[in-house]
Structures are given as structure tokens and as C-alpha cells.
Picture (cartoon, rainbow, N blue to C red):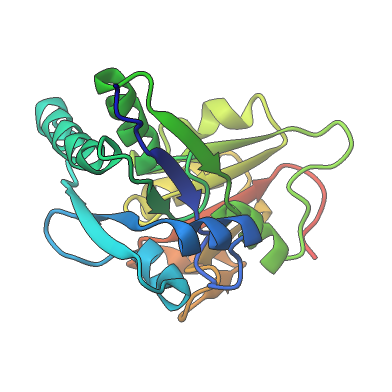
Length: 240
């Protein structure tokens, strides 16, 4: 007889505020015996784990290290090692959950882990619980619609600077630029060249201690921004 495998839950726990987690996510966490959270291979800090820590009871929490690198071979080795670790639990018939900030299928470690697990064991049952994204929380904080009527918006990573910014703004009405912390000066120059400096707001650590909203983004030049920083850039409309 083939042993029944457990279910893998990918759970988005929201952008940072512990109250911005869904009832469904809480219910799954309360009944799942094995919970995994990603950390950098250089430390053991996990924002996702901090968010849900007060909601956890008897669950076993294990942190999976992922290197902060762009080297494909190093990353692949980490995905495979961590996927096998999760599969060790699932193949015993026990359920497991992987928690991630924001939404588990939007710029998330879970997407890579899921693909690798499926490559190893295509029949593994997976249930994904969506979470509130950082940019929706930021829009709520600044009381600004992400889009209205026939408007469109794009979510773009700023991890490599302003490389995609000009192209993105040519085809949409609003840009959500994530991960602005590393190349803020380059981004500021691009926005100035496009005449959009006064159409952008920078939000850092949304929903967390140290939360800031900067409307005069010129003041950010030369500054060191927190890792959790983003910009909302609107070509039309207004901020409230």
C-alpha cells in the first residue's frame, strides 16, 4: 500500500502588521504540525515568523536558509536541499506549511520552493493561502487607489535599479516599485528625467515599527533606506 503524503500549505502572512493575516491562514497554522520559514543563510531572522509567532502553539517551526545571491548553481543547490527537507515531512503523511510575508506567489521564496518540490514529487498536494501584499497595505496607508476605472498598474522590482522603470511607465498608469533600498539615487535620477519626481511617494517598513512615508522623495538622495521600501508612482490622479 502506498503511504499517503501530507499536504503542503503555502501561507501568506501579510506585509508586517500581525493583524493583517487572514482567518484562513490562522486556522491552517493552528492545525499544521510542521511550519517552515525562510531565512538568509547568514542569519536566523525571519519577519514572517515574527509576524505569526504569537499565533503559534504546539507547531514545530524550522527555519530554512536561502543564500542572498544571484549565482544560479548556488541557488539551485539551496532550493533542492530545502525542498528535500520539506519532502521528508510530507512523505511521512504529515502536513506542512511554508510561511512568507505578503503573498506566497508574488515575489516570494515559496514560488521557487514549490517548483522544486513539484519537480521532485509532482503528485504532492499543495494548497496556497493568499496574503495581503505590501503594496496594497501601502496604498491603504497613503489613502491612494492603486487603479481606478480603466487605469492599469504594474508591480516592478527595483532590485536592479531603474532598468525597467522607464519601459514600465510607458505602458501603464501606476507603478509599484518594490525593493528601492539599494539603488535609490539611480531611481531618483530616472524619475527626475521623466518629470515624475512629484508623482511618487516612498513608503518604508509599512505596518512595522519605524514605518515612514516620504512625499518629498528628493530628500532621499544619498540616504540609506530600509530593505522593506517601495514607491508608488502615479502618472495621473492625486495622492490624498
